[in-house]
Amino acid sequence: MRVSDLARKTGTTTETVRHYTDIGLLQPVRDPNNGYRRYGNTDLRLLRFALKARSLGFTLADIQSLAEASRHGETPCGQVRTLIETRLQQVEDRIAELQSLSQRMRTAMAEWQTVPDQRLDDGRVCGLIDTFTDDAGETG
Image (cartoon, rainbow, N blue to C red):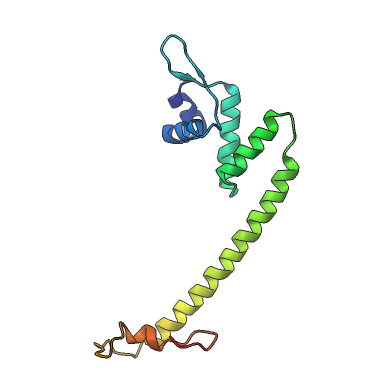
């Protein structure tokens, strides 16, 4: 298969196929007649795996490590379980941070509803932010 064939069969872009090839995840052979990269069924399976793994939050480094383990005859499923638990915790932590930020932003917007915009001559940039008190009771 050519780059375009592999991209089409997996629903991704030729740029993605080339990038995964450049980083060594996919390992096509060169056609001796024209020098083009030729991808086989192993590359097709690996690319499908990589795209699914990316959709689950695995990094390219994770995917390369899993693919390398598989190439050496290992079963990396235990590693997959550990990695996804770690990634899930990271995602949940980030969601909590974003929810907290969202609440602070809503609080600020509510506080600022009746405060007029004004130019400050005392060196402050914006009085709205300077006078905002967050959930912890900290000002500016």
